[in-house]
Image (cartoon, rainbow, N blue to C red):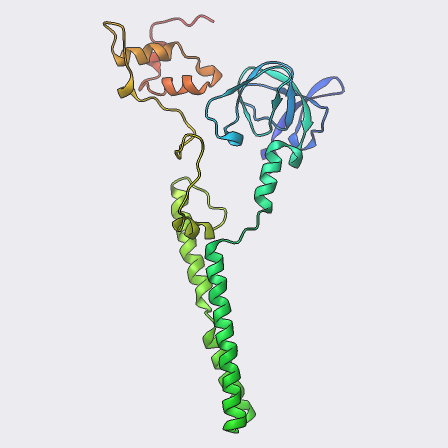
Length: 270
């Protein structure tokens, strides 16, 4: 598991070394290159393009200039920079949000219904046992041992023992089906709560997206004569820079069926 821990290139004792992100402290100078995940909140020294979709849901990379703050969990999509760490762990912007989610202990509607059913069964059993005791001993004057057997039968028969098992299996099946659609279920009772949902709050676009840009070829308008939509897409792909992992360039190049067509007979001059 140690090999899976996030790493960071940090300046220590005048030398650049690779350290675990967990040992970073405020004041450290870290180096960030293309594709790196920001290990801590930091202040930028150079200009860089970041994808902050993990924090804000924004698909397009955001340009950060010198002196701007970069947040833990963001991904470097363009440029190489050095930055000074200002916050780590739960003190970062992402860490505070994750801590709030973990400390949330709101009881859902489904759990309230189960609690109400359980309380009703307990109250019913208690009332039934009291009536049974009054009928068996003062009125019928039965022996002690047979009366205890009757009370145990009433107690065990009145408790819905199979209900938690049946509900857990049902929600586990629902969670497994959601996992096939790429959705992770953190709390299984949320599956039933979503079925009773009246209002869904989404991001600013009002849609549930895959956080991935796509190009619809049917909506492309070509204003030059002698150029069709396929040619326009091919020319746009040839003008794109895949090595920078830009979201728009990646979406355009992804429309080409054969990536070799992007290079074609041309020589790429840098």
